[in-house]
Image (cartoon, rainbow, N blue to C red):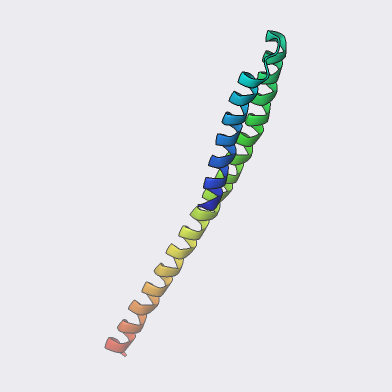
Length: 89
């Protein structure tokens, strides 16, 4: 969860930094458009990286859940087998 807070901070910092740059450093329209394109590209890299990390985390979580479920099924089956053997010995 700490990584989520980190990315929120990165995105908030990017927005605040962009707004401050546009308001405090006036430049020509062409230069501003170029800056905005570059910032968009930079943000896209962050978005793509975040998306990839999220997909990896989801994959690992699904694997962990499936592995845990399989283990529970094996334990239940073993317990049933033990009870059956005790009753029908």
